[in-house]
Figure 1 (tube, helix red, strand yellow):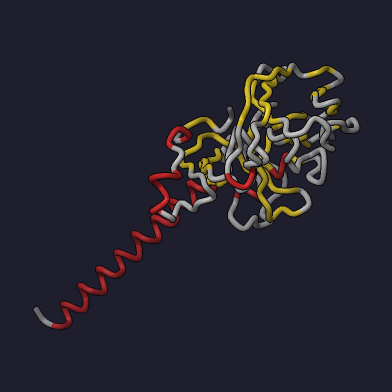
Figure 2 (tube, one colour; figure 1 turned 135 degrees about the vertical axis):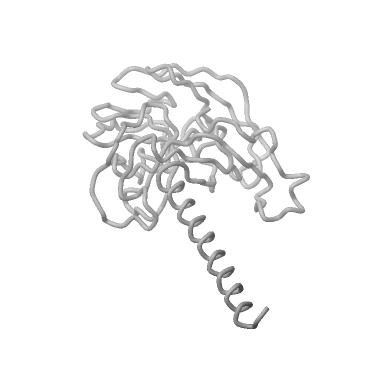
Length: 250
């Protein structure tokens, strides 16, 4: 074999590898933009439903697509295409209205036109109390572990969606609020950890439909102890196998 032939084969093999890599990157981009995007939980605002160290998939097609569905959020269009409205009780990822570079995850509580208020720890929607009963206790871990268990309450929304919330304190600033009237085209979001959540009761405000990224679907990985998934030596003690493949909507 001549040197020229060897050079051609090497060049051809390199080009084939580049093409495969480009195709894989384009496929990953399409999947991330149109189908599913992975997210991690950085705070305890959704305990006990979602814990710090949970890694989950978010369905991008559930609510259609906006400019925030595309990496780097280019201003290609406004509003949503192929849109579908979030439902009450959905756990959803959205862009923070005051800083669209930041992703938040909360539960949809108020729909456009709803009146939302907290009175003495009880959630009211359109002046009707949401049923709430204590179902047990929960002991937070890591940075949220105070050594004490926290009461767990189950709420059931008017559409039948049921989930649990935590009540860290009976007299927190979010336990008694003014009445919020949700504007058209916006949603009222709340964390399940009611006394430790920056949500629509506070600085988050009402969330425009355009800011929604997608609906949380399933936890595919979970690690405790404030450990990183890359710290493989911690897996034997910190992996939370019982959370793998659990619904992120519980």
